[in-house]
Length: 479
Image 1 (cartoon, rainbow, N blue to C red):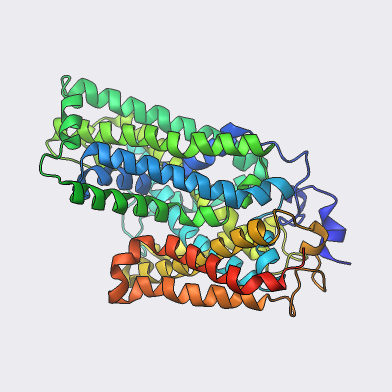
Image 2 (spheres, one colour; image 1 turned 90 degrees about the horizontal axis):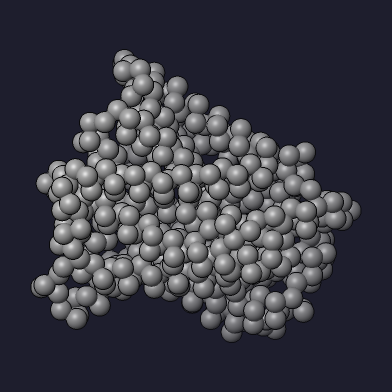
């Protein structure tokens, strides 16, 4: 009996231990546009996301309006991409690892799923650690206790915070995707409220000079058309790279959308419109800090520390905690769980995959500060990300050009035969296209000759993978 035959028709998800790869039923497709919006709100509202957006107005040598235009274009481009990649998830209720079976084969799909899960598991552990620093800040603000001597780079307060945050993640996913949705819906608006409050506080302390300081950041009298255009392209590339991972596995979330209009509206509000709001608040905060503290500060924790306000410190700690947990659930936990479950879907349930992910997180996060962060692992992670890029192009070409947006659910879950089994579960054409395109994408990370393409390796890899697969794979398709 195949996996689909004994689990797919039930439609229930995770809390009772069912496979997380099941097509979701209509009773589980409850996410409206606001829930989709909050996926993106939480994805950008991390401490890194704030620092990244704030730095764009300072570090790229362009005027503020150019930077804003680039952010909007990047938001529109990512929105287009996720509308494409999320369509099958919304229509059939399937996650990314199952969608990948249509193009790479029932066994071949395990390769990109494992690669995506590896990236996600690593960053999940790191983000658990960073979220724990917010809780540690809260404990210190309330008690004045600093934790004493360090063990593996962390004090007793740090370790208590880390284990607590680690357990908090488990408590959320143990209750199922409904709880994940609830947390995201609370965290997204809450972070915005606090950001608005921080802007108001800086406005009051700047004696009305906040807007003029912001206008100074926007000004770029020495900029030429060539320099502005170069900066514009660089910012678009940076932001596309920031969202690259979620673009690939967006069907992991779109499968819960009520309908296609909810997905489209949520992506519209959550990407270009959310980008405008978040960027404006980041810019105003940076401008206010420049007036109040005499320098342009892109790290929000440093701004909060300089205010010397215990109340603001407490509120900020809660905010940073919510923001970091939010992005961790969106960008790391869900793809990690689905990728791990896809290795043995008949045996690994949602909860079991979550516990496996959490086990790795305990090791990675616990050792991050003392050991792992010193190894220069960014090249390893960037290599995995570049390797994934062609999968997007292959899946899009397969679903839209080769299959005309039509899939057979029974065959997607048929492990011993069916139209998606190809040659022993592997679609040779897709694997070849993936391998060739991935080699080029990875080269942009490591080969100096291709360094000028490093910011665009995802787009190039996805385009190349799609073109090669379209040339080699159409003959293998059984519609």
